[in-house]
Image 1 (cartoon, rainbow, N blue to C red):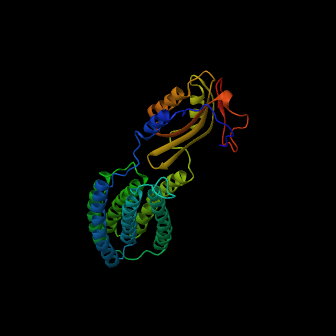
Image 2: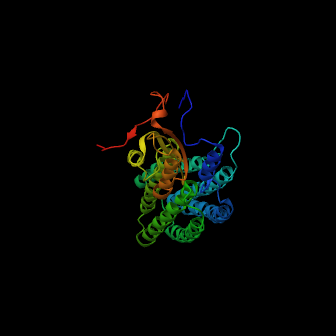
Image 3: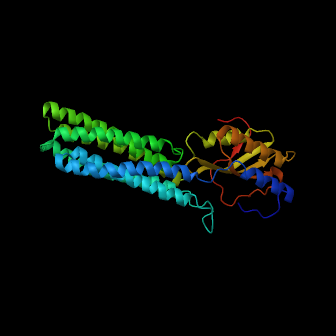
Length: 333
C-alpha cells in the first residue's frame, strides 16, 4: 500500500508501538513440539520397516500381488514418516535471512509428497490388479492370511503410536493417513486370504488389491488437495472471507475494510492482514484491539497484521494495487 503522507494510524507513539507488538506476538505458537512427536513417529517407523521386509518375502513366496501391494504401501508409509521427521526438524528452525516465517512449509511439502506418492503407486497397483483379474496366478492363501493378520496387528500398533503425535499438523496427519489406509488394506487382504483358503477363488487377491488402490487414491487426493490449498494461500477451512469482511465492517466506528487476506502459514497457523478505515471520531487503537480480540475469539486467528487509519486522513488513492472486495458499513446484499 503506497502512502504519500503521514496518516492518523493505529500506531502513533513508541509506547503504542511497543504495546501493539506485544499483543501481536502473544498467543502465537510458531514452534513445533518436535521432541515427543519425533519419538512416536520413530516408533511407528521401526514397526513398519521391520514388517515390510518380512512381507516382501512372504509376498514373493505366496505369489500374492495383494501382499506385495501392501508391502509397497508400507514402503510409502516408511517414506512418509521419514519425510515427516525431516520436515519437523526443518520447521523447528527459527526464521532467518529471507525465510521470514522459517521453514514452516517444509511440512506441507512433505504432506504433498506423501499424497503424490500414494496416487502414483495406486495407478501402478491398479494396472497390475487388472492384469491379475484377467489372468490370475496361483496364490498361497494360507500364507496370505497369516501375513495379513500379523500386518493388522503391526499397523494397529503403528497407528496408535502415530495418534500420540500432534495430528493437527498436516505433515503428521499425512503420515498417519498412510498408516490407516494400510491398516484397511491388510483387513481387505486378510478377507481375500480367507476366501482363497476356503474356496480357492484366485481372483480374490486382485480384488483385495483394488480395494487397497481405492483407499490410496482417497487418502492421496485429500493430502494433495489440502496441501495445495495452503500453497495457493486459500482461506482456512471454516473461514468465509466475505462474511468475515462484512463482520469487521459492521463493527462500531469502522467505515471500510479492504485488502483483506486470510491464509495458512502452515497447518494450524492461520494469519490475516487487512486495511481498516475508521470514522474520524473513532479511536484507531481501540478498534484494532477490538478486531484482534474478535479474530482470536471467533476465528482462532492470533497472527494478524492490521493497518488502521482514519478515513478522512487517507488520500483518495491510498492503495496502489488493492486486492479483493471493499467491505463497507451498511446493509449487505
